[in-house]
Image (tube, rainbow, N blue to C red; front, side, top):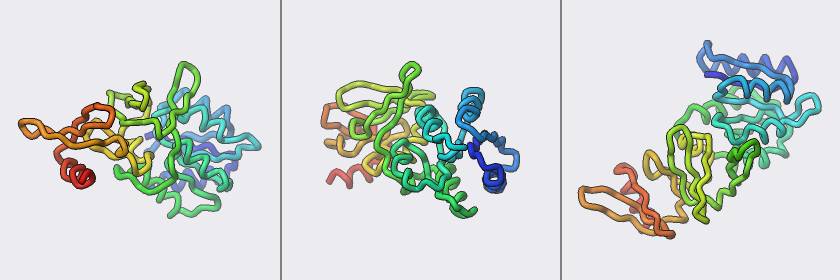
Length: 231
């Protein structure tokens, strides 16, 4: 696992690194950066699993990093004293915002969100970012009908019928999305507001009909929960 720490104060960077190694395997590879430019270079040259980002980097704005990489596959945890920027950070799809000063328990709580397969309470995501050529395009959460796993990508199926590719996996997105989104199948996450009714085919195959007419499969383990919700 590769973890990138972008923090301009050497003492705090070392403290974060120590706490990170104590939580994860001692052999986890940790990369350090103290500037926006160096951090972006590291990201371009390495396959990162998790980024720990300060928002004030020697006067530079950490959001410059976040805006550049928000569509990437890795997760981001903000560690910053600028708590007034927490809502904006969550809107960009960060996994957690750890306010400074912080202790080991609070940082480990953020790491637990990263390692846990379950969705946990956090900020309210407002949009997802997708890469379009060399630019980043923001997709409003309320425009998404459902999300389909597509190999190393996910497909965002939008209300007007358009499909956008996203780099994050279904598992990563499931942790970020608001409660209106639910995993209904190993390959699908549905915006519950789009659901119309459940259908059962011969052989015990379950589907859910959407308001626009699309039919999505429902996992056997999810059927009873879906049925109760639609009553």
